[in-house]
Length: 212
Image (cartoon, rainbow, N blue to C red; front, side, top):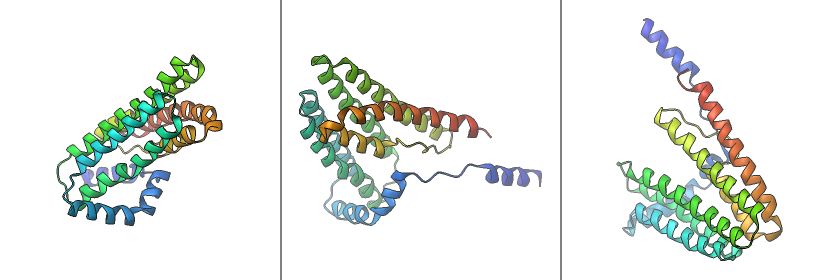
């Protein structure tokens, strides 16, 4: 009986998983992505192939960014968006059981962040724009921290998705920075500050809810 009460108390005190903007967008387009995933699965294309293809597209875009062609780099980043959503849809369509796909996806997402901000940092360094170089590096650090806190908390069975700058929101801010030249600096400032604030928010959330 005591065990039952303890279990009930734990269930009652478990923090609800917050609904983020990314979650709402996934739900909004879930029908489209599911249909596309089923169609691609019927073609025999493996989801890991799509994940890797997405990184290749981003790598090419990052090279363009490093050469100063921000707009075309942003176009390739925009092209990679459907691939980022499609790999998971294909995995669901094939009823994939192993967990390697999720690990591969998360790992290549980190490579993608590094390539994009690395390309920007390279361009800013070669053009002596060291203030923007600093903003790009701060954005990269914040992006890694946001993802890292979620991953480590997930290992302890705590879902952490709070904060304004999850991956989807960061991608939107990056597109604004790359595709609209007058908004480059404001978008980088928002990314540099917002990602690190989100990282701290998630860490505080873990502190208040882990093991409690």
